[in-house]
Length: 352
Image (cartoon, rainbow, N blue to C red):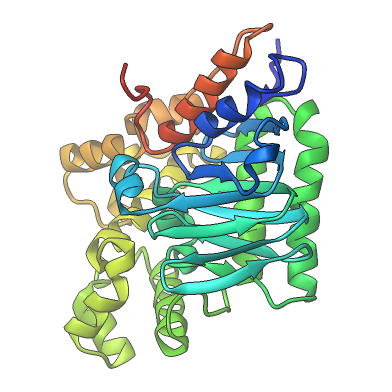
């Protein structure tokens, strides 16, 4: 029996209108502190619907003009929710500072809000779509976006329109999608993002961004090469170790990045039908893992399952969370709070 993609919502009519804004603030608490810009409109009910896609969240929300803050104290309390938000303002605008970057979010483009940095912003009345990507997923799949903030594409570009239309399509169809489709939806979205952004400098200086992207692509093409290491990269790209380490600092280190990419390649090979007859450790050897026990330990730490379990499940992700039919506004609020924290592995509500 199929099940829909898990979703939770806060909608007018679930509770008295004056209660909804406070529940909405609680549901987005891992991301921001929010306050209405006009206290006289504080009781106007927001609308939010959140979908859990396993590795990412999709959030559809509408609200009156707000002030958003993620200051150092807020970041310290929510340092495990340092996700990247890709936002489309379907209606309205948002003027803000994210770290040391100032920008205005307007309809027609998609903007990156990086929760590893401070956020200070003010919006008009707005309707937004947000794709929430955890940092570990970015580091593994979209390293060019790890340091992103501000406009993701050139204004009025085809790339901006293509990805904006993709987010609008997700809003239209996720309500009818099945949980079994969630992984494919995430992988398809990441693939589209990679194709649209892989040759762009996002977040870093132009030279550093281009160099990091080029080196990451070189690494992905040479994961089978046992000689792939810091020394070979320095030689290939004529840079010092200090320069290489500095470039890869946002990704957790160059050695760590190579290991993550090799683990991801092993995961794909182990779960591929074409590789079903091969021994798991033979696949691990292909990618430079010489110890079965060490490989199994690294794999389990990274994916939350052993290599054998991954093969048996066909690569399926752990079961998506569920929300009971007829859930109250309060349980929906807690679910959204948990889901935002759970992308980083923490599902214990504050104060519980």
